[in-house]
Length: 222
Image (tube, rainbow, N blue to C red; front, side, top):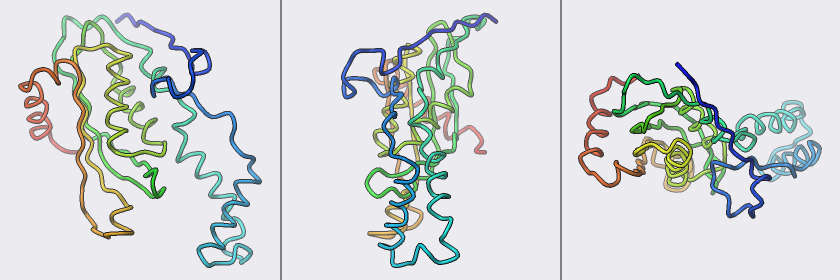
């Protein structure tokens, strides 16, 4: 099987203003505060919560939080377009739907910075080339590991796959529980939010949307 590798420009190479770059070209952050500033900010939050950052159990918490945040928000250091840059054209004539179901993820709400926990379902209709299945899951992970709204994340995944792979269409559905609803505010545990985005053939032909939904119901859950 022959692989085709395409290089996509980083944000800094496009010459465009940051707000003009599509999300799939983001390779953002070079202006982070220092580790010391981050740890001081955590100590401030601990005091705001009502605790003493100097007590034994919290002395190393600022360092742990700083380290955890770099992992939880590692999506800001990765470019989703690069994950999709290696494709395969030798597919034995296959041109039907490719569906990845139940891609688990955790993200954080950009409004309250509390977790969003859910699953993404992604399908596309190839136009002569396919991408390794793990690459689709990595695109989901990259966008999930940023501050998000579920609606934006759904569109970002679909638009990235559409713009980079240029398939005949993309379908993305996300189902997730938002801790900002479960832990605070209305405090409704177990409430699930569903969002979907369709491009190309999926958007233009309702029958393809129905087929996508039917396959989601029929495929065994992990």
